[in-house]
Length: 491
Image (tube, rainbow, N blue to C red):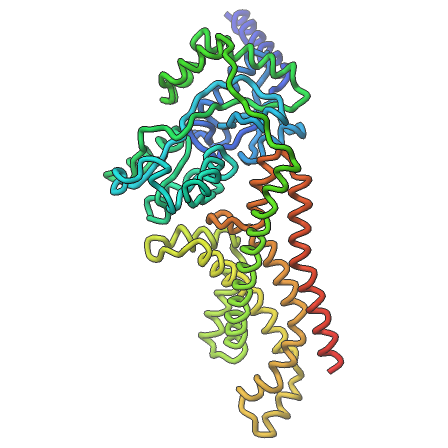
C-alpha cells in the first residue's frame, strides 16, 4: 500500500514538473471587456474565464504549451503583441484590412453581426441607420461599428458618439442620452440579459436586421508567421472535430452563422479584404478631425479653468475670512476632491447622478474638471493671500479701509502676482488632464489621436501631431504669463 502511494505521489510530482517545464504561451486580452469573451472568475478573481479563454487554452494544448493570460487594454492589444508583450492577442479582435497589413492574423474563428439597439418606445421607427438621421448613436471607439458610424455621418447625418467601454453606451441609451447603440450582437445580447436581471422588464430591444457582419481573429506580431500557421492548423482542427462548437455552445454564442463560417474556412474560401489606406492618406484625412478635437480641448480647458478660478477664489476667501463652520466645510471639500481621482469624480458626476440630473457630456466635463481644479486653485490663492505682509493689512485698517476694500485694493493685487505662475502651470496641466473626459464620450484631442493611431497601427505620426498641437496651445500661454510676470514685477 505504501509503495502504491509512493509511486502515485512520484508520478504526480513528475507530471507537475513536466507541466512546469513546458514552454508558456502568453496570450493577451482585456478582462474589463467581460463575459463571454474574458472576465474575472467570480469564484476566484485571480483567474479568468470566457470563451476566448477556452480558445486560448485549446491553442496552447495544441502547441504543447501552458497558457498564461496577460491583461492589456483592448485598444492596445495590437500594439502590445507587436512589441512582444505576449505571443497572441485575442479578446474580440476584429478582422479588418489594416490589421492584416500590419500584423500576422489567424483565420477567422467567430462571426459577429453589427446590430442596432434602440429603446422599446422607438423600436418601430428606428430600424436601420437611415432611420437615425441626425440622431446620436453610440458605440465602442476604434471598432468596425465606429467606422460605420463615421462613414454614415456624411451620407446619413448620423451623430457618432464614441465610448471607451461597451457597457455605458447601453446605460446612456436607457437614460435617454443616446437614440441607438451599434455594436456586436454578443455585446448587445449580454447587455440586454444584464438589464433583464436588474429590472423586471427590458428598456431596449435589439433590431433583428444586421447592419454588417464581421469576424474575430487572433493577432500575432508581423514576424510570427510560423506561429500563426500553427494556430491556423489548430483552429481548423477544432472546427472539424467540434471542439470550437462545444466551447461556443457552452457560452451560448453558437448559431448557424458559425457553422457557415466553419464551412467556408474548411473549404478555404477567402474573405474579401480591401487594401488599407496609406499613412499619408490617413494623415491628410485625420488632420481636420485633430484640429476640431483641439478646439474642443481648448474650449473645454478654458471654460473649466474659468470655473476653477471663480470657485477657487471663493473657497480661498471663505477659508481666510469665514467662520469656523465655513472653514471646516470648505477644508473638507478641498481634501475630498484632492484625495480622490478626477476620473472617479467624472464618472460620479456623469453616470452616478444621471437619475437626478442628466448633464450633457461637455457640460459634465467642464463642471467636473472645473470643480476638481478649484480645490487646487483655492490652495494657491489662500497661500498667496496669507503671504501678504500683515503690516500692510494693519496699515490699511489704520487708514480706515474695510476688509472688502483691503482685499480689492491691497491684498488681492499682491496675491494675484504671487499666484500667477502657479495658475499658469495649472492651466497647462488642465489642458493635458482634459484627455480624461473621453470616458464620458467627449472626443477631445487625445481621444481623436488614439482613434487615428489605432486605425493606422502606429503611434509615431499621430503622437507627433498630437504633441505639436498641445505645444502650440500651451507654449504661447506660458510665454504670455512670463511677460505678464515681468511687466508686473517692473510695475
